[in-house]
Image 1 (cartoon, rainbow, N blue to C red):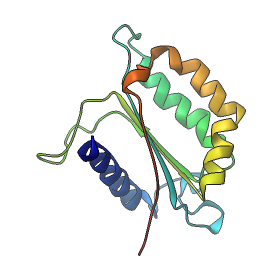
Image 2: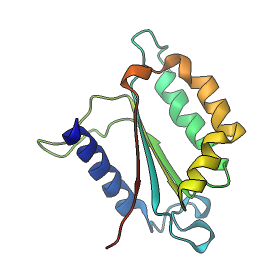
Image 3: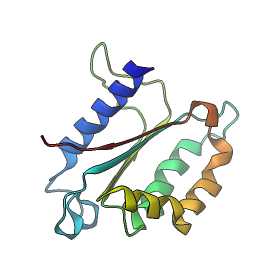
Image 4: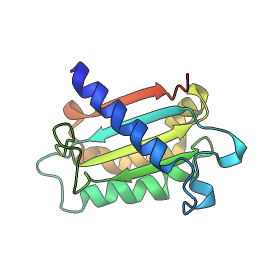
Amino acid sequence: MKRRMFLAAAAALVVVAANHGAADAPKADRADKGGKQAPYVHVVIFHLKKDAPKGAADGLIKDAHELLAKIPSVRSIRAGRPADKVTPDFGRKDYDVALLVLFDDYDGLKAYLDHPMHLKYVERNLKNIDEKKLLVYDFSNQTK
């Protein structure tokens, strides 16, 4: 279990580092939205139920960008399926959708969790998610 958490956190850091200052990222989706760094990271790994409809993964991803990205405390968001190519020996593809959300701090995460757009996201998608396999990792991006 510790290895699994380490790997997920490491993967999230790679995504954050790769996308942090991306010049081609839309202005509203940059980690430094509002001129501030976004050091608080929220990672969710989704596994769909076996009987989930065919478009359930697409719905999770689409709703993340259409609903969750609009929540004021969200500084940046990434959502998608496992990459075609993964890190040899460590890369995992045994999930359906991953979500990475950046905030300024824990208060930003708390505001996000309580926000009506997040509640709508959960309402729309929870029926297709295997809650027993749901993984959530929150950490502070430490520079020192």
